[in-house]
Length: 72
Image (cartoon, rainbow, N blue to C red):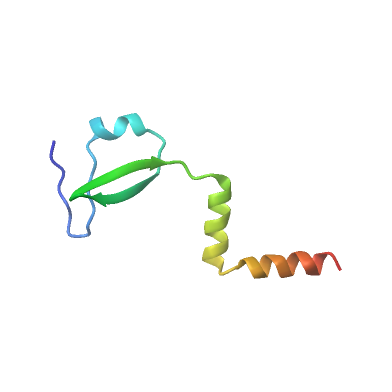
């Protein structure tokens, strides 16, 4: 089966290949010996929280400071 790489570096995965992975939105991707390997990944709520904190620029120190402040 062939898939074409677009000018935006996107590849459409054929339905017959992706169907068993219904509901999966994220894939770990790796280049191994000249082959592109995709592994399905289900992000946990903790991963989503970490991603949100990172996007907001909130560090571990910020969280520790907020906890310390709330306990005073």
